[in-house]
Image 1 (tube, rainbow, N blue to C red):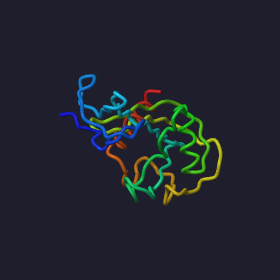
Image 2 (cartoon, rainbow, N blue to C red):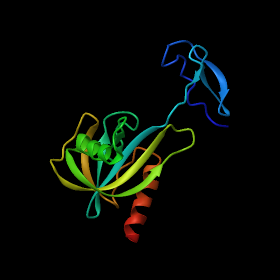
Image 3 (cartoon, rainbow, N blue to C red):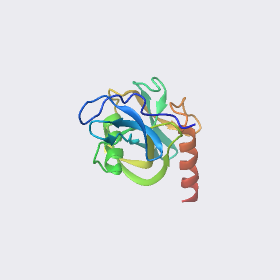
Image 4 (cartoon, rainbow, N blue to C red):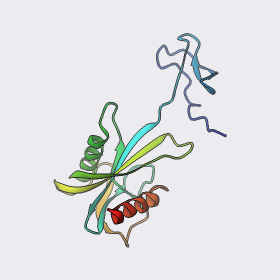
Length: 169
């Protein structure tokens, strides 16, 4: 069964009329009887960067939910109209104080029922000063064999994919 990700959409974003449910393009969707248009929920795009230096990676301890207190790669949402690579570099700078160069795409990750699509890059520090932000309680370099508890279920898969790509060149 496909989860209904737009159950909370109740009003038309164009005219603010109450929406009803109709089958449009083979799926039940919010529909505005006034505007006569369906509301299509787009996925939310996010980027993350595995910032690597030798055999260490940079992680931040999250100061916000989800995953408050756990560790994750610098990451965040892509702004509308923003290039993915620009968003990736911006998020690392905002969250860690480091400027990075992107080396390669690690992968694109999505899960059934999850509205967020995550694009992950490998990056290398190019400058800046390591610091925390309003989204991070701590920022630290970790050896790959001594990683702290990670915030998200896909983080271990991302690390495996990254290590595989690194070993094959």
